Image 1 (cartoon, rainbow, N blue to C red):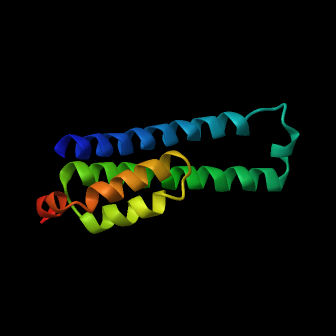
Image 2: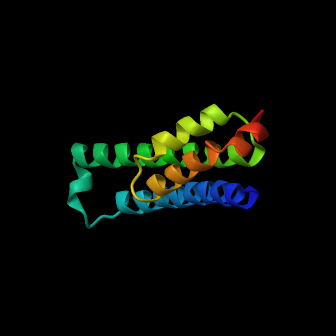
Length: 112
């Protein structure tokens, strides 16, 4: 069970890193001179909202991974895992696995 717990926590950190790398992709798109839609206010607004969602997902995934590694704040980890289920497909898979792991009695004992 400890191995599964460590694997899930590691995957959360890896998901955070991949979201962080996606921010660089957003930046590359923003500076593309060949795309005229980004020169309009709505294009920049859409890009800004997408970047903020990606940044918040990065912070949430990294926080959840660190909390699970340190076995602190099980309730917050559960809330983040449930919220990340909306981030299809990887957030959904990791969220469900995390909720499964966090609901186990052995894990509840480790957090207390």
